[in-house]
Image (cartoon, rainbow over all chains, first blue to last red; front, side, top):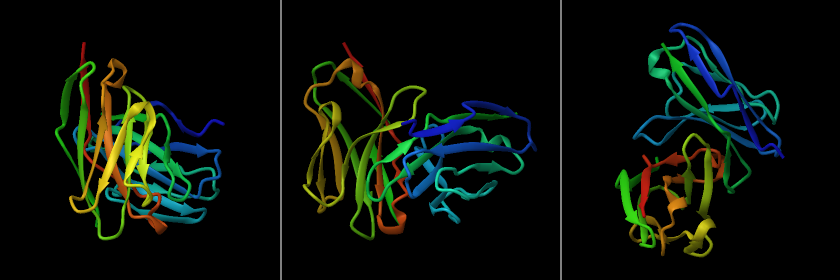
Length: 111
Length: 115
């Protein structure tokens, strides 16, 4: 099993550019989430989904969009990148009350 | 609303010494509690979880944690530190139900192990 796969691993964007971070899981988990990790702040929830077609905002949703058309995929879109979005992004999937499985992360730099 | 506070952003121990990483939480409903470990440039890996069964939870790599409702704490311990334990540790809480996929994390504790 691949688990949770994130692409790309690294990305540099210019301010104002848009891009999509990809996330795919092969464990048939219902719940998927996107987090950003910044030094000294832990991980903060951006968006999450409880199933295909259902998404909701987390703690820091501004500047990001998500959709979930299939159980497997949960892409995160940056609409107009800003330097404040420089961060490490993690996708996770969860089955019920069990553990969350995390991808390896995408390190994004906005210049 | 739920929150997590990890006391101490950096903890340093000698190899063979006790490891104690502190976590306090707040939650309006019975919580699910987790400890995750992150090695440099990697994702997070589950160490252990509390989901309302036994209050003393054993995890991987010799770690354990005790859920104390009266103290709203879920501290992580390991009797004898190993060099390979050096990493960043995160405590997290979930309120369950439709919020299973929503984890609230503490700010993290970096554990350094000296020879």
